[in-house]
Length: 123
Image 1 (cartoon, rainbow, N blue to C red):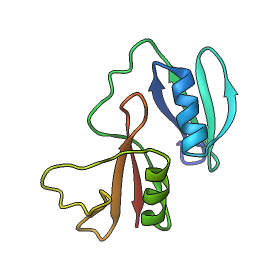
Image 2: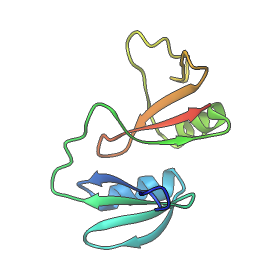
Image 3: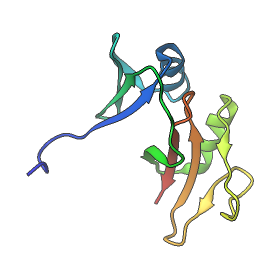
């Protein structure tokens, strides 16, 4: 039914200026619109709407993630821009915070300014 539709991703922010600085300036996503309701970005052809709300109430699980070809240089590059990667007890992550999943994938988690958990995954 929806297999022909284009996916739109959503995440929320309580501070549109900080969100724009992070998603555009740090992550390098192109802004397509910024109004009172949402910051809209192009995430490699997928629309990402960062909804502007009063209170985010970030959750402890991944809200958005990117599949990447090579995780290590991206983690190093984001760290150089001040991004802090999350480490979780018992996960056995390496010195950069990258977890080697049983499936063979490599995953690293970080947060946006509102505390939304974001991830990078190398399959």
